Every structure is written in C-alpha cells, then in structure tokens.
Image (cartoon, rainbow, N blue to C red; front, side):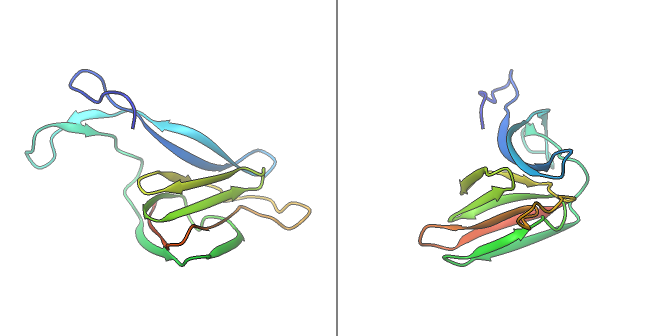
Amino acid sequence: MSGPGNDESPPTLAYWHVWVDAQGVSRQSRRELTGFTRQSMGGAAPQWNAVLGPPPRRLVCAVLPVAWQGDWHENPAPQWIVPLSGRWFVETMDGSRVEMGKGELSFGGDQGCKADATGRKGHRSGTVGREPAVLLLVQV
C-alpha cells in the first residue's frame, strides 16, 4: 500500500492484473486500486475503504502443495487472489512471470483467451519454494 493513508490523503493499493488483449493473449500489468473513502464500519472509527465492484459470488480457500504446477488454463471466473502464506507464480502467454507472496494481490481476468500455436491458453501457475501456497480467491 502506498500513500500515507492519513486523515488527509487516501491510500493506493498495488496489485497484478491478468487480462486478455484484443488478440486473445493473456498479459499482466501492475495496477493500483484507488477511490478509497473514509467510512465507519459498524460504528467503529472511520477507516479507508474502497468498494471493489459487485459482491463476491464465491469465496475459495486453496492450498497449493509444494512443487504444485497448474498447466495452462484460464481463471474460472473473474477473481481476486490473495496469498495468505507461501509463495506462488503466474506466467501469462506474453512470457511475463510474476511471483507473489503473503499480502500481495492479483486479479485474474483472463477469460476468453485464444490458444496460441503451441496450445497455451490463459496462464499457468505454481508454488515457489519449500512450503505450500495458501490462497484466498474472491470470485466476482
């Protein structure tokens, strides 16, 4: 998170966005969540909140074992992915590979990719290191 997030200036929150270009190729870009406003939740002191689109459709907790690798696939639905522990990677069709750990965010929006000449479609992902990656998926 960047920005002081004090009473005067709202924070921003960086995340990785997996998306599909006009040619059907998956890509990753670094983006920022903005639009934080100060609000009280349940009568508590005001805090900075940013409401992200529609309510969740489903929450999934995933545990990816050590050395797990998911072959090429698309995200099953647009989803926020929040690593809770361990590390994992996402590789997109454009050749970008991003490793993420606890507290980093990714948005999986690669539905509708077109398979390339080698059959790759969407992204592949897997664990990094010697511990499982525990992910919270918020499907919207």
